[in-house]
Image (cartoon, rainbow, N blue to C red; front, top):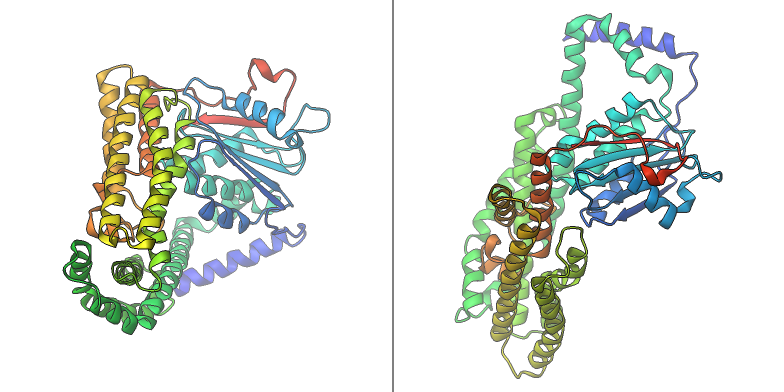
Amino acid sequence: MRIVRKVLGLIGLVVIGLVGSGPAALAVTPVDIVVEDRAGVLDRNTLLPAVQAIEFYEPTKVAVYTYNGSASDNLNEEVLRFARTEHPEWISEDGQKWANGLFIFAVDPVGRHVGTYMGEDRKVSPETRAEIQNAAKDLLADAQWTDGTVAGIQRGAELINQPWYRSTAFLVTAWTSAGTAVAGAATWLIVRWRTRVSSRRELARGDASYSNVSMDLQVTELNASTIPETSRYGSTVLEKHRTFMAKYNTATGLANQVHALSPKELSRRKNLKLVRRYADAATELDALDDVIADTNALLNRGSAWAPAWDRQLAPFRADLAAIEQMLSKRNAQGDSATAAALRSFRDESHRDIERWTAELSDGTITPETTLDRLRDARTHLSELLKNHADTVIDGFAKNEKEASLMRQEMESAQAGSKDKYGRTYEPSILGTVYPAYYFFSVPTFNSGFNTGVSSVSSARGGGGSTTGYGGSGGSFSGSGSSSSF
């Protein structure tokens, strides 16, 4: 290690000498971020903070556009059409180029295309555009649309207007002189640094949840002690509570272990796994103590029953609100009979929710009956979504092999759906009583639908890199291209 450090130090001096006369590179976050998620595949709560933190070399406006096309589509032509129709400010005054200071990242999750487009003062070589797109493709191919978009924009920020002394060619020349051993050491250092960053992020997630659980520990025990065991829902939640302290003690042990780790030890992969175990355990407990509190408040009609009931309704309301966007997607068979059934159910459910809440408020029905009705409604929605999935598959698949592939993707999405914290359960009373795969939600449908259509489109074969703007592009010659993933 001493030898490696000495060699690295010598190379550092050489690099400093080479770049000493170079201009200082700016590090500026985007001056504006525009997200047009017409495909409905991005998590804005994750995407926006991530992009806002990305640093470019020059002040840059970032635009993100998604839409559901097909494998035969020209994404470049679609992006230009959309810009002309919806965002003329993305185009230069003469109508021939992209506007200065602009970087567009576009994704077609169904046609499996990714595209990058830049203003004349931000344009890069075709090879560099391909490198930006390639940075996102593994994630996009795995239907990780938000993470793939962030990865592509991050790579774009690293390459657009990159100073010469930070170019790959320069760095390769500088590092090659040090030999394979030093290159290996540099890679090792980078991996350790990334691992340490991930460990600290997971540690912060775990600490936030563990702190919440610890502060509410006595309140959680009090809430559990008054949950009626005669209730079917109450008894199941109490079963979960009986293991609560054991899980809390496990989380405490993990907390002690991870907080004893030094910064050096946080750089090791095995310890990242340990920290992630701690974060997952604490997050699960944090959700469970909320469910215990809501169960107590709702079943006993305590002072906080109304917000507790709203939290139980929240997943169902989110599904109902997302139905129209789901049906408006390309290849989503929005004019079918099963789509009409979903819309009718949505409208009826909004009225039912108001009626249930009113009856619960005046004591006409019991909290348990209300939960039964909510369970039945979500079960009915699951059946309607499954029926519509069959419609979508029949409309898109050309043969039984393609239909089987799409059905498999739908089933996999339902069986393995996770939230942003990696949980496979829903933190609600129904989510605690019933397994994760019991309800088929709209986000799960979207995930299975996008992945299924993408898999079939990929199996059919798609085009390679595309640089033109199609027949409707006219004389437009802005810098940009797209490729398949």
